[in-house]
Each structure stands twice: as C-alpha cells, then as structure tokens.
Length: 274
Image (cartoon, rainbow, N blue to C red; front, side, top):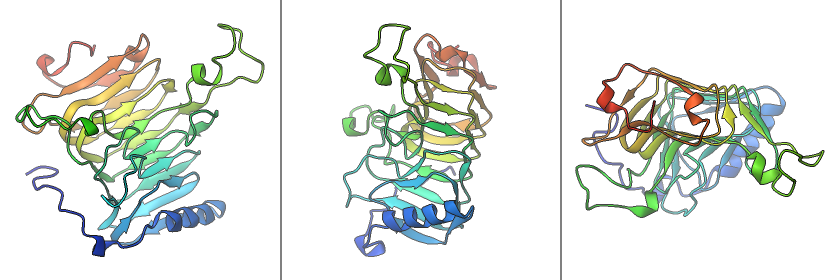
C-alpha cells in the first residue's frame, strides 16, 4: 500500500487539450468578490500557469485533478494563495510533472519584490503529487538534477533585505517595509514524489502544519530556512520510499525557533534538527 504505489501515468494531450488557468482565475476573482467558494467538479484540468486564490475559496470534488503537464515548461506553482482569509480544500489532486522550486502549492507573494501580507489562509485535504525526487537512496546513480529541491508546499514571504537593501543597517527608509506570511494553516494533506515535503522560507512566522502524510520524499520532510519564529509542525507520517530521509533540516540562526512536535526514534532526526 501507500500513497503512490504506481508511477504517475504519462500525460495524454487528448485528456486536457486546453489550458484552464484563465478560466480558474476568472471564476476565483468573481467568486471572491461575492464571498463564494468555487467548486471544482470531478475531471482533469490542464494548468499551464498559476491559479491565484486571493480571497474566497477553491473546493475540490472527489476526482478533480489539476495537471501541470509536459506541454508546459513552467516551474511556477500550480496554485498560489497570496491574499487573506482564502482556502483550498477537498479530496482533489494536484499533479506536477516539472520541477517546483516554490512548491506545487505556494502560500506567499506573487511578486517577491513587493511587500504583501499573506494571512489566515488554509490548505486542507488535497493530494499533491510531484514528478519524483531528484535522488533515491535505493537508486543512487539515477540523479535528476533538474528536480533538485522541488517541494510540494512552499510557504514564503518578501524578505526584508530584498526590499530594504539600499538603506543603512537598522536605519531603513521611512517607506521600507517587508511582507508578512503569518497565521496560515496546512492540514491533513497528502504529499508524494518531491525532494522536500514542506518548505518554510525566510521571515515566515506563526503558521501551523498539521497531520501531513508524506511518501517518496527525497531529502527532507520539512525544510526550515530562517529567520523564522513560532511555526508549529505536528502529527503526520513520513516515508523516504525505501531510503533515508531527514525529518527536518534547518538553515539560519532563527530557524530552530520553530516547534517540531513528533514521536520518532532519535536516529530518524538529522544532525541539524534539534
């Protein structure tokens, strides 16, 4: 058994001949203005761009699948939550065949050179399938560098240093401010076929990750890249698909301020996770 006991089937163009990105974004924009969630019926939908969930919600019916196919070379997320009080939920699947450096699903700004507040968003119950990890312990000679570092969920922000790099240290210009990605929730999702399950990047605080099930993870279930604070990770299951995988890896002086609640044998924790 497992999340993905069979390889992803090859994409067939006749399944989804047209890109549905614009149709999704138009429906979400209209629904968000009226406070209505958009229902995704059962079926397969080709997404060459990024679906933006900025307000309101996206509710998947069972059997609904969004596909980033080989017809697109894009490595952008299939879905991005870049507003406030929005949600993505339901028993749907997002399938990515390309690399995903900012996640198959991204909670963060569309433009990282402008300050944005990304607050109180929820991703729940969906399944995220990547193209497979870049490296497997059981097949060390089959390295796919183009997939290195791909993640299923990426939570990121607009780094202060990027917006305020021209100002003297600790004396930024009066109009200089960074974005905030706070108080978001990822709960009960299933992940398979990526190097990193959940990537929590710089200046992302007070978010909660709960009960995430992961299989076929190539590097780390959770990657924490600081400075970060007050993020909580709890519950869930992690499998390296027949090989070694880190439960968590951290980079930066403040990344360790995240709380990782787990019941694992000590040898499953990497040296840089405390």
